[in-house]
Image (tube, rainbow over all chains, first blue to last red; front, side, top):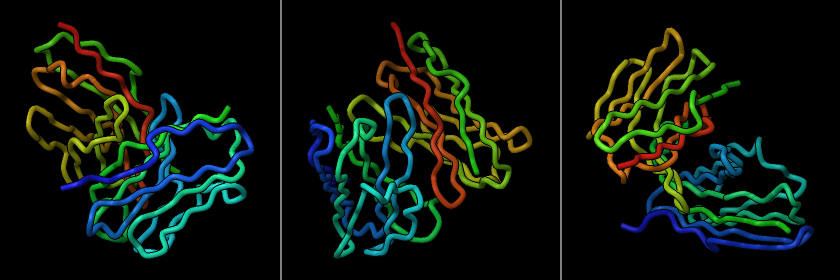
Length: 116
Length: 109
């Protein structure tokens, strides 16, 4: 069974440029999460989707970050424009089940973003 | 809100010894706890979880202990192997997962 797929794995951009990350969750998982992981830190939730609905985006910096999950399957996270402080690993995770966050989450390998 | 912290940023153990990684949390209402393992270049991988109605749970070579009185949980790895080398995170769940900062486990021969 394929796990959570993310692309690209690595991205280097100059500040003020836009960037987008793509995630395909495990088949059948209706809940999808985007996390940001800074160097030496644990992941921090940016947004959680249940099907196509964003049910928790309280930690998403909405001035420059956006996300979508139009058909309730794969998802895209966008940053426009990117800033130096956005350099991090962006992780996507999915789980089966809805509601509270105590269903096992399966993580993708992440996209390592470097902003120069 | 919840805060989660691990006691040591790095733990070095000899192959075959037991490892203990500790974690503290702040919210006494937290009711679900998970340990993740993250290898270099990979996403976190679920190891074991425990709910607040339990104080101990065992898996294959791993045991998680939960002390709700002092808001502390630990991960014990028996007979640590080189393949156990990774960063270990505890995560606490109320409505969302809150991760700690991680402990890097180094296994030397």
